[in-house]
Length: 105
Image (tube, rainbow, N blue to C red; front, side):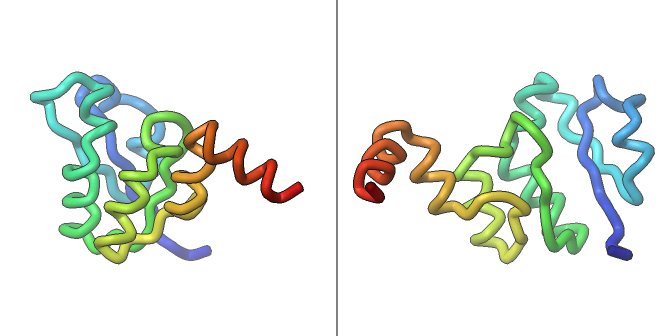
């Protein structure tokens, strides 16, 4: 694709392979637990904006199915490489997903 990659990492993950395989890597806050750092939507969006990152692939877990993360990226003109905000909203809620399935026949 000839697109440079960027990654984020917590202090605890500073020696992991994904940090070194990315063209750029950005360290998250040391003032938070590793999980909390990876879930910090505002900081991730800020990193993207400050570094002209145009798209985010959320990987697996953490924010990969988080409609608020996808919406925050969309609001800042950053593409979310995954389901749409509407799909995340609909299928992230079992009741709305079931109602849609019933309505679809």
